[in-house]
Image 1 (cartoon, helix red, strand yellow):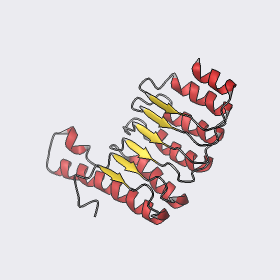
Image 2: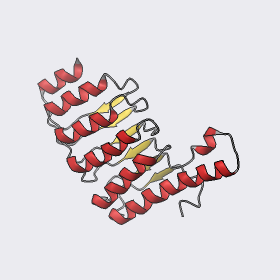
Image 3: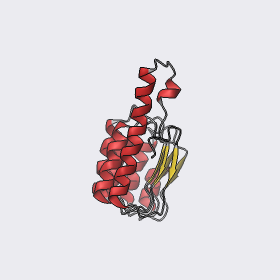
Image 4: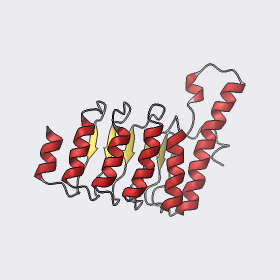
Length: 191
């Protein structure tokens, strides 16, 4: 079990069709692992912040068929995690509503969540979804990489991303390739 393997920090399951129930089991185990570490630290009176921050740091679930149940489980993890740095949900059939659920959890846990990389490539995200995401990551101090390529984002979404760029001072990589962005959107992003 993941929870019994106390040192696991990276989990790569991209391309495995684990489905909604499998994704839920993964998210619940990742959260349980983090909570178990915090509990042990508190009981053992260990004063190390590093020890209390053990848990899944990188989670790659691209193409796993997470569905609504899995999406909610990942949202629950995002809403409580203090360890998750990389989340890859590429090719998971995420739409605007799914992204809104995830964004809400990111926003509610923004101060504690150390998310550095959010990979949302190859989904069905449009301007509406980007608006939810933009509100969630506004002022995020840890985000370094945002991958939104191969979605359905247009000029309005590019404008929303541009507004976030001003507040995300650590962002190093933004991939908006293969969307529906034209000159108007590019100009907004380049200001």
